[in-house]
Amino acid sequence: MTAPVYVVTGASRGLGKNVAELLLAAPILANVVVVARTEAGMKELAEKFPGQVEVVTGDLADYTTGEKAVEAAVAKYGKLDGIVFNAAVIAPVASVATLNIDEFKKLFDINFFSNLVTMKAAIPYLRKTKGHVVFVSSIASHEEHYYAWEAYGSSKACVNHLAATLAVEEPDIFSISVDPGVMDSDMQKEIREKHGERMMESHHEYLTKVKEDGTIASTLGPATVISNLLVKGPMELSGHYHQFDSEILSPYLKA
Image (cartoon, rainbow, N blue to C red; front, side):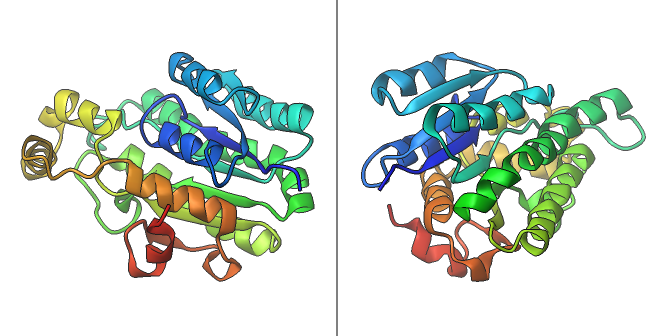
């Protein structure tokens, strides 16, 4: 049986890199196309797992980057079994009254439209393998409407809708959106250090406090759930949004 082949975006650090590592290591031993703007972290993966990693460096705001990742998977490994759409940005953090529309559009290019374009390119191959797709979402997409997070929250709402739509349109492809929660990531660092003045004070204080007191979660738990869903997510979960630590996803928290 040939090794599964996956694409992971935003794979140079944090959650995306953790997901790629779990897929590459035993017991999964997958081949993984890693995609990010920064090459260094992806090169580390290629050195640690020789022969299993194909690196695609590029900005996903350029839609051809995602298409190249799909093409690379098929060209090098002969198939595509799944994708983790992890890459995203938080900025612009701004109220509707003050936001810059061009910055808003750039965020959507990365957080949503790149997923849409990449998914369109991948569907013919995922149909053949009855593949799995995991979209990284956020509680900001529907439950918590945070002040000045209109761009990020609405992009993640679109991601949820895309996951649900794919489940209907492509019944042989597993599709789910997963909220990884507040975790110790570079995005959280950016939020704490750069965007506090434009956020609701209580929200910023909370995100700062969990880091300072050490209660912020690591990226390993969400990465474990996401990698397991990518490999063996059941079709009854397809089309839904879940928080990674919800009861329904608890079976996937084990490595």
